[in-house]
Image (cartoon, rainbow, N blue to C red):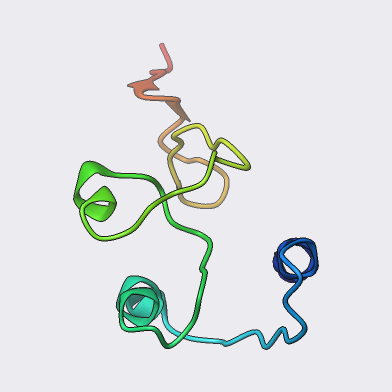
Length: 84
């Protein structure tokens, strides 16, 4: 993501690029307060669109589940496969 942000800054003719490491919960507040000029890593939602503008999405993630190592309950997507 740093490379993408750096390229955006270059394209816009901005000379300085200073990445800021922060907690996830600070991404929107930092953007809206002017602490930084852009951020990444947020899904577009109606609530977020009330306070910020989004560019065209640069990637799409499908929903998924995290399961215990080895998938002992045999989850298969959003359904459960049961042994007979």
